[in-house]
Every structure is written in structure tokens, then in C-alpha cells.
Length: 395
Ligand code: KG4
Ligand code: ZN
Image (cartoon, rainbow, N blue to C red; front, top):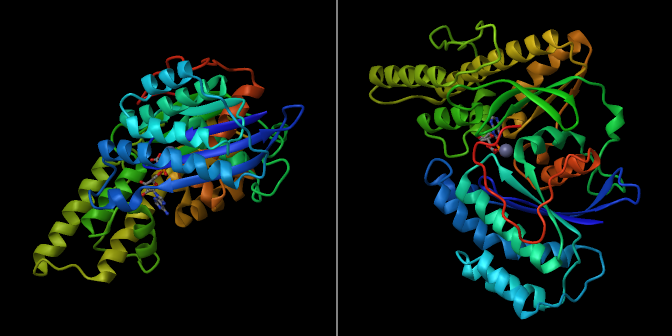
């Protein structure tokens, strides 16, 4: 079975094609492409939803075309009768250009026949999600196939299943029976900060989440205060490499001892803002590179302390057998290094995504959808049927 997966929840437009094995226990990756809009949003200091939506609409057909042409699979001719064309035009009535390009692409006959479509339906930016969903619906008309809506956060959790050499492997994911439950998942991204109890693949319970900013968002906002461009996470982390303990630069560890799994990062961000303002006031509106590095270093330490304490508490409380860390911020070397130290002490497994799987991508959506298929926890939407984008979708 050939599956096409689509991700458009934020500022990455991504399409993958996977092919399942006969007994439906694994799959191989046929193609996996992503276009990042980072450069476009950088000017605005964050993701601008209307712009994200427009860019997704522009990127989807070229990405699909490349997915087809790169794939080492037989190309086929798909007949589009007037009824299908009318339905596609209706579904994509707000993206007429996309509709035209899509129909042209299908008419080139350089197409791979798809049996199932998976698409992120939340959480994320609603306008951005809608573009991907409607594209999926149009494709399901073209291929006469069902759609499986997928939760983006389950994508981040299951991203750790992809083997390090997943692009070349006949079986791209680790055998799911290799894992012992329960596990704890820490999901840290630009939109989320959650501790999740993973009772089994496909069976999740959110134990706690941020009550204000997400970790990635805090990284981005602090970076902006320090004059760094969006996305700030990687830049803070680079600056922190030259940072050191500085008795004049100390930040709070919000809710460290709250005794639950909630997080708060807006107070930490504000305290960084005051510190920067004070330093600048004393020095003719200047801040030197060493101070920027020291602030970055202390900020990363504060974040790591809170994430680690709460996550370790959850591991203890639920006697977890493994820890999964997923989402864009899991690319942060310092935070991961600190976690490794803690996890080594208690001798449980630590599961991390491959670096290129940390950020948003469609292969993690295919993986999560595949897990849902295996678990038969599925709600197919057939042939162009309605799917709602749910911006605040829960696990
Ligand atoms: O998962 P993701 O790609 O998109 C969302 O679903 O939000 O996460 C993006 C976030 C951004 O806030 C970015 O600054 C942060 O992940 N990020 C990092 C690092 N790399 C990306 N934060 C800290 N350190 C990094 N190395
Ligand atoms: Zn994400």
C-alpha cells in the first residue's frame, strides 16, 4: 500500500510517500520532502499565519511533483473526468491556482497511484492546517482513496521510531514491540510544552503542559530581545556555548517546585527582558557579546532545570521504562546533554528523534498514522469528505 502524508500545521510544508510491507508491520520511505518558510517569517520575528497559509498553497503542488518524479516507482495515468474536476475545483475554491496546478500535474501522467492519504488536522495554525486538509481532500478525489487525519503531537512522539538510516532501510521504523511501557514523552516545540504519559503506542495522556508560553516560543522571544532572528532557538544555543556562570545574571526557574507537571515560561522571559534593559541602561544602550552569551547560557540552564525536574518527577511517579523527547527544541544539544546525565543515573532508555526529524516534517505524520493503522485506531474520511482543522487538538 502506498501512503502519501501531508504536514502544513506551521511553517514547514512537507509531503512524504511511504510504502507498507505486505504484513503491515513496517514501511519503507519512497520520498520525503520539506520546504521551510523560515526565511520568509524571519522578517516578522515569528510565524505569520496568513503568510504561512499562502506559502503552503504555493508549495504543495511543486512538492507533490517532486515527490512523484523522485520516487523510484512506476508512474501511472489517472483519468480525471468532469465530475472529479468539478469536485476538486469546489474543494480548492479558495486556492484556485493550486487547483489548476494540481489538475495539470495529474494530467502529465507522471503520477504514482496512492492508496491512502494522511494529513495533519491539528494542533497548529488553523489557516495553515486548512490548506493541507483541503489538498488532501482533493487528492482523495483524484485517487479515489480514503484520508486518515493525524495528530501532529503524536507525530512528534512517534518520530523517535524512525531508524537512523531510515531513508535507505527496507523497514524504516524500529519494531514497535521493542518498547516497554509506560513511557514518558516530553514534547517541546514552538507551540507546545507537554509531559505525556505514553501507555502504549496510540494511547496517551497529557500529564501537564505550559500555562503560557511554549519553550520554543520563549527561546524565540529571548533571542529577539538579544537581536537574533527567528527562529531563535538555535542562535541562543550557539551563543550559550561561549557563555559562563555570571553572578550578575541569574534567572528564576518558574514552577520548579509546583509539584505538578505544568510549566510557565513567560515569567522567565520577562526576567530576561528586565535584565537586558538594566544592562543596556548602565552601558549607553549597549550589550556586549560576552554578556549575550552569559544570558543565553543562564537562560538555557533555567529552561533545562525546569524541564528535567518535572520530567524526572513524572518518570518516578509512573515508573516509566523510557523517556521520549520530541519537537523542535529537542534539537538543543545542551538540554539533551543534561537529560542524558540524569537518565544514565536511573538506567532507563532515552529515545530521541534523528536531528532532521526534530522539527516539523511529514514522515513523522506518516509514522503516527501508520501506528494508528496498526492499532486500528482509525477514523477514515472517505473520498473528499469533510475534515475540520482543530487548532488546539489534544492528544
Ligand atoms: O517542532 P517545531 O519545528 O515547530 C512547532 O511545531 O512549533 O519547533 C520549532 C521551535 C522553534 O521555537 C525553534 O526556535 C525551536 O523549535 N528550536 C530550538 C532549537 N532548534 C529549534 N530551540 C532551542 N534550541 C535549538 N537548537
Ligand atoms: Zn511541531
